[in-house]
Length: 322
Ligand SMILES: Nc1ncnc2c1ncn2[C@@H]1O[C@H](COP(=O)(O)OP(=O)(O)OP(=O)(O)O)[C@@H](O)[C@H]1O
Image 1 (cartoon, rainbow, N blue to C red):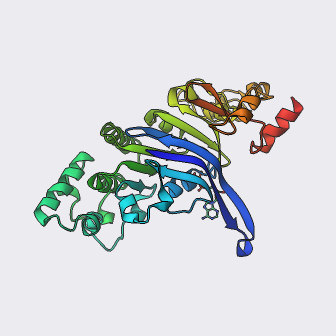
Image 2 (cartoon, rainbow, N blue to C red):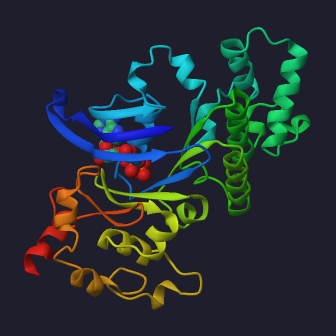
């Protein structure tokens, strides 16, 4: 369904746009029907930029993004595209105009996409969509955004996507602002939608969430893919030192921060990372024709050479020392 191939994004920054900032470089992965793919990485690694490019909110600088083989930038009718692909973002409040009732988001969809549907039938469809995201229509219809919780608003936005019967949802940090119990509700809701065939690009900096929801995981570092593959492989057998350090830094439920090792990771794996270098995947990554810069270490499990161009400076230094 969705395919990114060698996608890059360069922003012009600084005074008069005189400096180039490469936010995303040579990224390629797919999202199939009924598949959840997590895009994981630290702040600034380029996750949202990728989401925005998929949503056509930001132009691609290099490479292609295709939907069913069609370059999305060639789809002139944006409405046709947004009928299939929608985004939901971190802050649900910012998606609603406080002076209008929250259900205006549904009215706008009707106006744009379903002008011929009668009022009664539309009301039925809205109620069904709300129930499918476990909202009681009687509780939320007719209310203003400030009368609803963040979780309710987030679900209304997902209901809007359900009404459009989209094929791909870009979910960018959608549960970061929700409390723990609402989070799990929204995650389970995504699982329902996935079971109905919806593809989901799940953008998060939270590894445990990525592990919980996704079939496949793409780990981004400085705009490049460090590692990607089936989630159980990436989390169960991480090969890139960066993935390992991210996983090691996840706080453990029964460990107090005062008991954490002083090297900054939760289980003291800094030594292990140094031992990994020089990189065992250098030749395979260089030689790959299908996934340039990535070595396939198991079926569908790819890892970047930690010493190649684009690797973080401290990794390069470690490689030189090794
Ligand atoms: N519109 C823009 N103009 C210039 N630079 C930008 C723009 N948007 C993002 N960037 C830069 O691109 C890089 C990647 O940003 P992006 O928001 O994609 O990262 P992210 O991984 O989603 O981070 P976060 O988790 O903090 O949202 C950052 O260095 C950021 O400062």
